[in-house]
Image 1 (tube, helix red, strand yellow):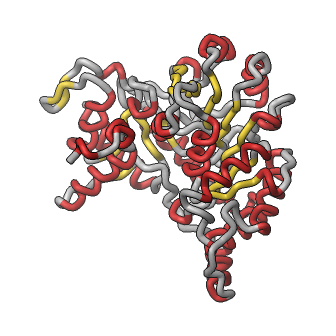
Image 2 (tube, helix red, strand yellow):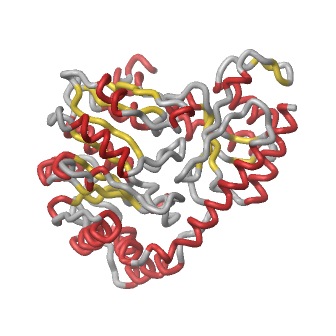
Length: 395
């Protein structure tokens, strides 16, 4: 009975990535051989040294409620990681551990945004950003950057989007869905605009930090003048293949961290005790321990770009991070394939699912209606077969 549900939930969109995954599962249950390239989930197992730490925690009888904002030992590991990898110095009261980076982002939005406050979302953006802002009663403001800009906004675009209502800017680098990576110089140029607007808090989602092919990651909080107004979001889901462990965290000004701790205390309380102990081991380890996964993603990126280049009407750039390609498919709009008229990216994505049996995600969900997202967090065999199917259908 939809009329009895809150306006809040009725207005909330369903996650497009999860919806496509559900549709793919439904087709699999009907005996269809679906290749899933829709979810942003590494196909690797969690590294053994991390699993061993979790087993040890079970044997050591970690089973009680945890501190709302995380074990002190995990906070220390996060502080070490920020200093080692990002040249950022935090104290324990600036760290909050949550059940995944998604909760971390939601906490920040809920404690910062009032009704009508604007949050700038450089588009393309991760599907949940706009929904999270709306749940916090804020107003998402899209700033679109197309493939001709490598999906990165310019300082002038940022300047033009700022109004007296702007309270926050939320973005990811490396980017989901495009794989674009902002350099330190590009972040500095954006920061120069933000310095004239001290009321704006920057939320920098760096969950794909280590899956980076350009030889170095840049953090907005490390840009001169931005430390005291930037919240850095991170976690272990992507780089450590720990999506189901659900551990994310923030490094933030202490006043924001305290507010997030207060919010989380009324929603979920502390993160799973066993997962937290495992993450201590993960973060204390050198990045070289997970380099084999990063190298594999790099090779898969090159493979899928080479294969997609053989299909007319798919325009790609070269993503520098994450594990997605984000081709512009607008050349196919208005055409009919297999008796189906393609009006938009959603139609195109559904065509690939129903005719090629390949699951992707429409760019509409990411604020980029001309594109689709293809994840290459899959085996080389699956990638090769998937693109072969797509090519055959579109031929």
